[in-house]
Amino acid sequence: MARHRDHAPPDESAETVSLDPLINYKPLGRPGPLTTLTAQLGAQLCRRIAAGDTLRDAAAAVGTSDTVVQGWLTRGHEAIERGAEDIYTAFVMEYSAARAHFHRVLQEAQLENIGNRAFNDKYVRWRLAVSAPKDFTLPRTAKPAGGDDGAFELVSPEEAQKTLADRLGRFLSGEDKKTAPPPPIEEE
Image (cartoon, rainbow, N blue to C red; front, side, top):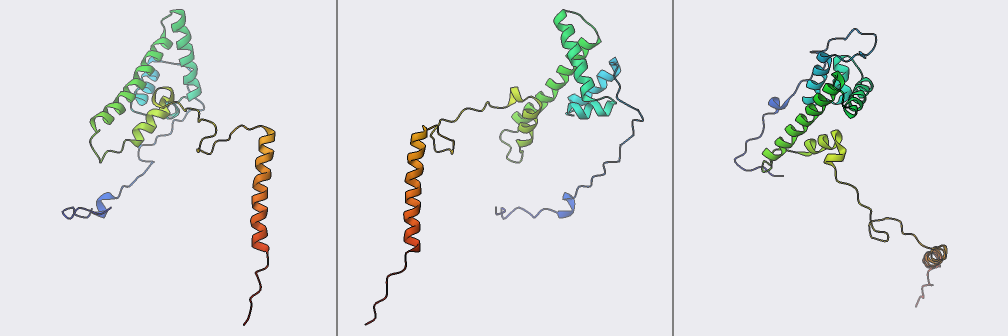
């Protein structure tokens, strides 16, 4: 795409981004994941979820695993169904609020930048679809059989045999034309 004549070429040195993954890394120093839910641990995890971390990354950052967190969420949902209130029900509510917060931030960014051509919302749409596929993806619809979309069409065995014979006949007649010797050239 051509640049506008008044548009200056970008400064190449300003676009360079350096990345050092070890800047803020601190080893956890634990033999295994934390399995006991505490209010502090739940708050740390939910804060990371609200910031956009995936469940696996957020759990690893606070010293537990996504499987353990799923267990806490299951216990919390069961307690909610029983009508009980405990640390697990509070965690479920906080976790749900953190996810909803992150989704809302992404949606607001999308809405604020509707007319902004510099804003590429592909990441936003992808991230929403990954984090909540039931809420942010369109359901797939079945394609009609026999369409031009390359889908298979159900036919009877007799129809299939007839079609195969027709195509084979056309193919062989084409091959006969290719392999036939050229007509002799008459000299005068």
